[in-house]
Length: 65
View 1 (cartoon, rainbow, N blue to C red):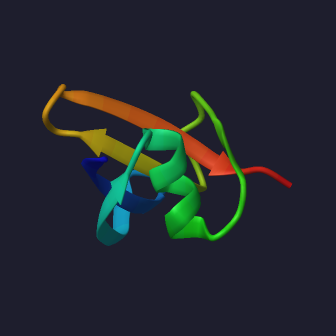
View 2 (tube, rainbow, N blue to C red):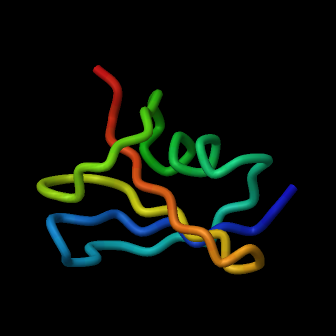
């Protein structure tokens, strides 16, 4: 498992930050939201930013309805 920083975002503003252990960034985002997520390029409104600091990668997710 890896350590991920997961930020709950509204537009460009961080609302909450979490330190999550998960196998994948997808799983880390889902743990924070407590529901299924999908990868997105959209970074407006409510979204989740997952940072893999070891690999210097950033992923964006939204809730999957």
